[in-house]
Image (tube, rainbow, N blue to C red):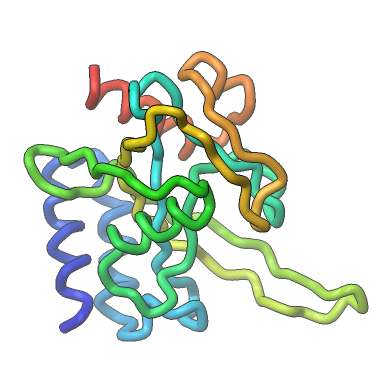
Length: 192
C-alpha cells in the first residue's frame, strides 16, 4: 500500500509525542480510509507537507505571510499525489523559499515529523461569487529542516506577501496561531 510509509511514520510520531494520540488517530483514519488522501480532490481533506525551517546557525526560523490565508505560517503545500510526505515538505521548502539545500533534523534517530495538525481551509470564491474550491481540511505533516545556506538569502514566491527570518522572541509578536507556536516550542526543546 502506497500509504504504508506515512502510517509507519505516524506510528513513530505517536511514540515520540504520546500526548498527541488524538491528532495521530485523526490523520491515520484519513490515510487508512481514503486511497486518494494525497490528492487535492480528497474530501473531507487531504495530506499536505510542511517545513519548520531554521537558519544555518539555528537561531532563526523562516515564516511566510501566506497570500491566500493572510497569516504568518510555516512553508508547505499539497502532496499532489506524492506519498513520501518528507519529500513534499522538502519540495515546498525549496519552491517557497528560493533556498536549495536543507538537512532534515532527525528525531530519535529517524526522519519523523516535528508536528502534525489538521486545520480548516475556507472556501474560495471567484470575482462573481462562485465557489472555486470548497471548504476542506489540510492534514498537515511538518518536518524540521535546517538551511545549509550560510547567507540565508531567500526569495518570496507568488504564494506569499512576505517571507522573512525571525528569532524565537519575534515569532509570538507576529502570530498567535497555536500550531505555529507549538512548532517553535518543539524545535527549541529538541535543539536545546
